[in-house]
Amino acid sequence: MTTAAQVHTGSFSGQTSIYLPSLAEILRTEQLTKMEKLFEIKFKNGKELGHQPGQFVEVSLFGIGEAPISVSSSPTKKGSFELAVRAVGNVTRALHTLDRGAPLGIRGPFGKGFPVEEMKGKDILFVAGGIGLVPLRSLINYTLDNRSDFGRMMVLFGAKTPAEQLFQDELSRWRGSKEMEYWETVDRSDGQWKGNVGVITTLFPKVSLDPKKTVAVIVGPPVMYRFAILEAQVKGIPDDQIIVSLERKMKCGVGKCGHCQINHVYVCQEGPVFSYAKIKDLKEAI
Amino acid sequence: MTFRTVEKKNFPPFIDSLIQATEVVGVREKVEGKYEFAPLESSSQLALDYDVTLLSPKKFLFPPLETLMKFQISPTVSCQPVLESRPLVIVGIHPYDIKAIGQLDRIFADANEDGHYLKRRQEAVLIGVDIKRASPYAFCKSMNTATVQEGFDLFLTDVGDSYVMAVGTKKGGELLERHAVSRPATKEEIAKREEIQEKIPYKFSLNAVTTPYEELPRLLAENSQSKLFEELAEKCFSCGSCNLVCPTCYCFDVQDEVALNLSEGERFRLWDGCLLDGFAKVATGENFREDRSQRIRHRIFRKGKYIYEKYGQHGCVGCGRCASACLPDIANPVEIFNRLKEGK
Image (cartoon, rainbow over all chains, first blue to last red):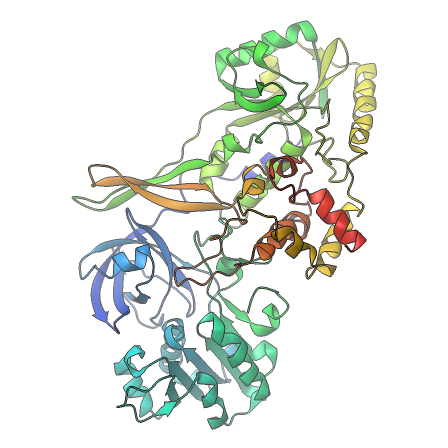
């Protein structure tokens, strides 16, 4: 006489809410560009976020709401984590008014991160467009901190203008780094810029790589994927070695609210990181 | 499953006894010919010969607006979950709505347990009833929802002078024992119940999906680029009424509200709909299902493919509420499925 109700709801003890954030506070902020600000955050109870590179959290400002934000720091950095946030919506604009010591709520980490275990031993081509550097920085710094586990690091970064380049201190270290090969471009020069001008796809011909042992990790605005994936394919990189992270409206983060779905896929559960092989047949994905 | 019989003269006292003991919701006539699930004050208000209700009883398990937590902003920031629930008996649920609730049970318990739903659900008792009159829009035979043999605590079949009650759970049996004069059903009564239920699917013969239940996912997969979705989009208002009345739709939005004292507030969720324009729109302005045709396709694929592939049961239970709620008359799944099958 077991009914569906007993089978499916029987185990729930009934005291907790998956929507309840943990309290956290801002340790440090840094204005990265006109639109983006970095927040270093620590849980009030001292626990670690315990994320994988590529995962996201739901940031709560009580009275304003919640927004899904990619974690920008590497899990190798302990004691706190970093979010780099563009002021575009209600929550993110309010977040930008906050500074050190301000309280907020955090839920997560959520979703599937980059497949770091499968990437070990491989050469990695990182392709970041604009704000796509925010989640990719988590992986780049993770790779740098575990450098011997990986082959070549090749980083391509494109921004609209020099002023919109994020993490400029880190970029200047990457430019001269022996740990990685770094190429950058801007869509529009500001007159002072001495480097490449053009969209990110113009950087691909500068790179020579072994497609069999290379994983391409591509993160950028929605419009960038189609073109950047095509460039990776032209290089001969197989679809299951092309990794992307997709933006969607992750309202609840726990696979219930429905807003992030691509066809039948809940991006907050099965993504935001996907191999291109997995999503190329999803009509609405790219 | 055991069966017990309640004589018809003993049925109103059963309901009235329940009403004395706990909160009871049942089917009532709201205006002439239109029914709703609403609190019962007396057994006389119960209308068990209804065709369909405006909204499903989902609204009592997953309310249109529900507080998830309370928070304080000053002097210090804190937050506490709100898990509201109380014992509730829902009387007169048709099989399609019982199946819809069973689906919600699985979805809200899946992977991350949604305590807000589950706690309320665990305190609810579901009493089902056979469909006596078919709504003109319903197509329960096609969706295997004209009858149901599980997912309820009690289920009533009118066998003439009495109701045969299928006892689905221990909770249902106890309720019957405490509140009703009943006796074990006879073999003849159980046979009569089966005979009645066997005929129920045929009440829906005039409104049928031409593709077999198990083949709907393939039909949709083969027609994902059909021009039909664009044709329907030309008439669609993006009003979300089809989502609003659907017994299996469970998408929601989350919002905060600050009290007038500006020092505390609540976070609540409210029903949302994938047909609404901004459903998949992110803060940067990108809308991942900007075209109405994409949103119509998404809804139909949810109802006839995605949910089935995950849970083995279609998201559409054939109640026909969307078809009757849609002002431009384009939401009817029967017409959409059948037109896709015909290739026009």
